[in-house]
Length: 89
Picture 1: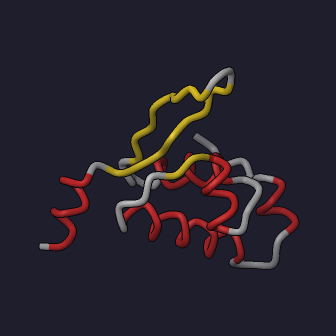
Picture 2: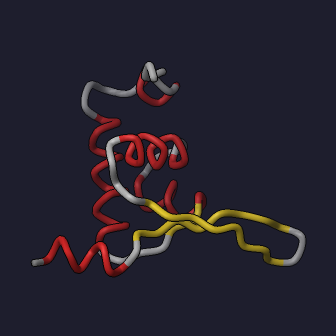
């Protein structure tokens, strides 16, 4: 599948998108669970879901599940703790 650059990739300084992906990867591999809101805030981006999609395409096994808070629905993203443990060995 051909990679389509996001708006963020097109408008940001060279290498900035990769830094954002690395921030998100580091957060997830530390055991954090992230929503789009928290991911955007912590990774200093507005395109968290695109970065998650690209990280998945690169092979990072990011899981997600829908959650509901009142009338709001959103996804939470994480990496299985057992997978994280295998990386520590």
